Length: 363
Image (cartoon, rainbow, N blue to C red; front, side, top):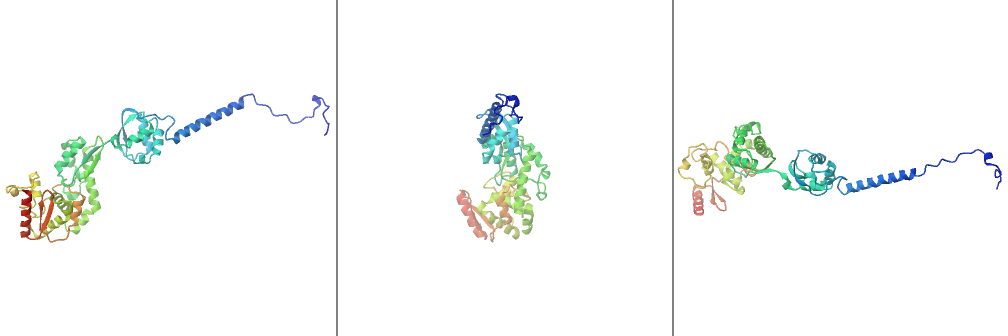
């Protein structure tokens, strides 16, 4: 081993690279500690998100009552923003995180909801998925109802007045009433279940029923199909409205054939249902005087179809009016009013026999 330089004084030592400067005591450990704290904070935040909540999410089911409106087309993030603005959730992220973990949240419908303030995101999602939280005015219109009855039911369901709805009927031509209805809305307020939001207007109520009729008419290709039968669309709706009153769904197509056979033969239809409509009543047995009622709807006195529908037909009756069964029947009688059993006849003698069965069963 070389001894070179061992005997030199410090001042005589050869020049060389200077050793690195040492950091001041404690700086580096502090930096490491700060970085560790940041990492821990990030881990906690990500952990909370993975559990379906935001770091500042409210806890629990909330309190009080808050009304919020979800508009058509709102995304989950937009709904979350609405809820946050109303104080329902802490921020939109709390709702979005919770909604993202529940596939049903994609089905949250537009409408008015009753929620609570200071709810957790998960609690808000759960309550919005509960039908009881959605404020809805439900209107149910059965097949065959007349317009006056429909308006009364609509007024009761929505809180509107019958007069307000009648004012809208006067504007029906601008709300979707087909031109072939000839300005009459009877028969075109479609029987269905409707849901309306608080504050609904009469035009929206009437427009919804007319829109639903047009949807059905479009699916049936009503105008072209009526033309193929040699009938107008209004005549088809009129026949369908008669079917709703005179027969059960299983017999719609047969009764339609009876009506068309009688029209072709030039026979009066002789329908109690049309006389009932003329009188504004609904009775099973009409008196001789009632059967002489002077009205274009009296199909005992006047041949052909009445001037228009006598109620609102549904899909099945419209379908049958466009697709009558094959047959030579000229008569039908509901021989048992309790079971609504309907029987058919081609000859007048057979009709009289069926009429006796009806009188026996009716008492």
